[in-house]
Length: 245
Image 1 (cartoon, rainbow, N blue to C red):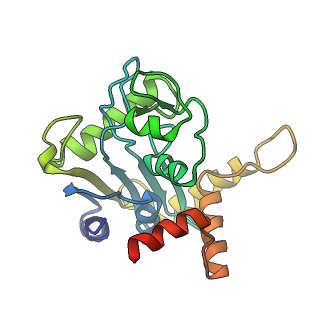
Image 2: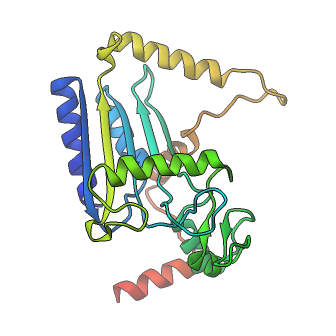
């Protein structure tokens, strides 16, 4: 998404000048990509970042089978003493990209993440593409959160929402806040760090440390950067070669 970095830089500028910033976009026709990328960049300049992205309708409201909401991810980034705390999640049980990947690799989906067009649970990615994805918690709460993102990232910036205003393309919302609005920056970073360590060291049944949300993805990224290459399935690699030939 070309507009993403532009919106991110603008919201950082606004927050640095005014203490907070809000930037909405519309007209997107491609994936927003990982929202952790944006919120981490915002957090690294000592701002709190919240980013939401809209996408084509794939998730029905709770109790329905008609896709009205996108997978509608939301990401949070917080500056901390050691390293930023990052959290990025979709409001659907599975991303549309993961469904396409399963189709490309000839794999089945996990059960209870998608519906076929008749509203039946399916593990067939081909049927899921024509059907719908379930909300991440399979309840009214997840579907409700998807609807909130639909309003903030779609309707509010003037993009399409549910099945309306499609000519406006998909929308995104970028928000950034200075911790200084409510608390000294260094104190805030110390407290975030304290919270992270409290959670990490909280009691577990097997005695292992709790893994903080977002750490696994960051660790995988750092490992790939250290190795200097990415491993890609042969089937997917062959498809990429076809696109570039």
